[in-house]
Image 1 (cartoon, one colour):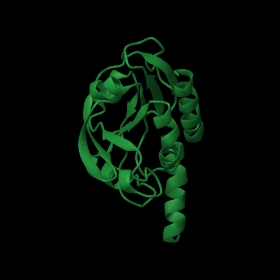
Image 2 (image 1 turned 45 degrees about the vertical axis):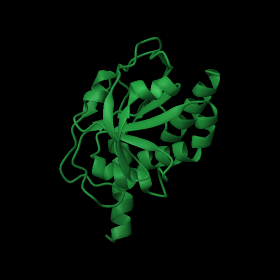
Image 3 (image 1 turned 60 degrees about the vertical axis):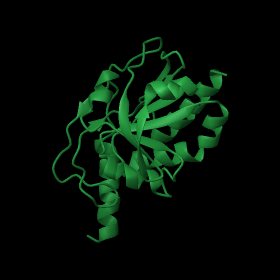
Amino acid sequence: MGKIMKNLLFGILGSAAIALPAFAALEVGDTAPIFEAQASLDGTAFDFSLRDALDEGPVVVYFYPSAYTAGCNIQAREFAANMDEFTAAGVSVIGVSLDSIERLNDFSADPEYCAGALAVASDATGAIAESYDLEVHEGSDGFKDTRGVDIDHGFAERTTFIVTSDGKIAETIGSVSPMENVHKSLEAVKRLQ
């Protein structure tokens, strides 16, 4: 099997393997757990603080399984393409996964996905995802991303939280496609205006 076919197969299998079922995520009205994490924007690592971000306005906190997997690539590309609309609504966006900051430095700068427009944070232990009542699954040996690189971490379920400036969850979005997740997030932040 050729390299292109193998990568395509891994991408298809990867998106199926990490299309995790919805869990008992935090709900509307719950207080969003405040967290700090190393994050990356356009290939540069920085310290992200949800508390500081909320001081500037509402925040979309979206959890995704892994950088460079089929569904997550689509979701990152769609968030990046719509970042002007989120910004115009007075909202910031942070993606969170169990990827290392090194993987996220690549992903955040990749012109095909985050395109230097979308910040992504590293939750290497899964503690942040678990604080939002998301299920975290262990990775498996031999699992590769769409570039053919080994994925050596676990996966959080794809769920997005719209967090208002007072730290409350206005909406929880899960169990939808990566593309629909972004569109529903944009609709939700526009309702905050």
